[in-house]
Image 1 (tube, rainbow, N blue to C red):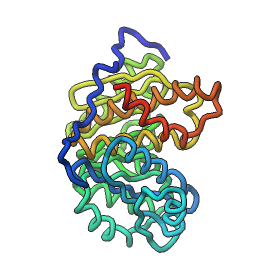
Image 2: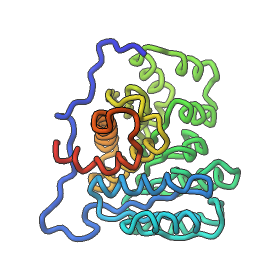
Image 3: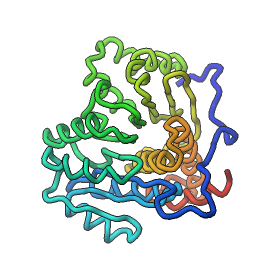
Image 4: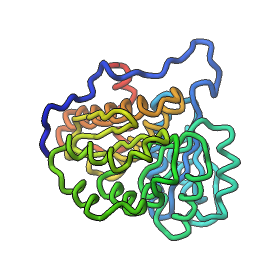
Length: 295
């Protein structure tokens, strides 16, 4: 990957949500996290805890019952709603929609899986729930550009490819995006290709060696991190940070910038602290509070 005349996100561009001294529970953001499956029970817990560590007041997780019980056993700080079955399906939509009424942000996709019924559920949920959203993992693979508004999507390159295929983007354009090694050119092509999506108040946070954060009018780049961040769960932490910051600030772009910066800095700190690539995504959650003290 080549970096030509790129300006990277710095500490000065990080703006943390303000917290009033006389605030009450709920004044600092409520996140509803929808995800998990019998295959991936840990992802939604990591995302939920990262959202809490960002400073929001409360995270409620809606998940299949076995996942939800596992989350309860893992952390007393996360509230859960337990659904029958091992996977989400269209029958769960009404329960999720009703729950979102009391929350600021919907986080969807972490560990949710890719069964046909789950993909249908994700698409319907993203399209019909108008709350601000953070869309991650398999939920990204289930939607197209016409489905989302007021959202941050957090794909890696393969998830972005699924998203573009679902959006019926020409295969040659997708191939060009995948193959472009000059990151500035790549980001401009993604912006041009997804402009209608970005115009609906959406943000793309493309994860990579350098994160690319694309809004309707601007592109930001965040560097840092290391090869240890290829481990499962690190993307769930990033999505949780996005949701937590968004619930507090209601600012989509700033929340994506904050989350990317935090995630990469935490990875670099843990590489030194653990003296190698032995750190885990759960270690990253615990490190969030230390990063906040440095801003």
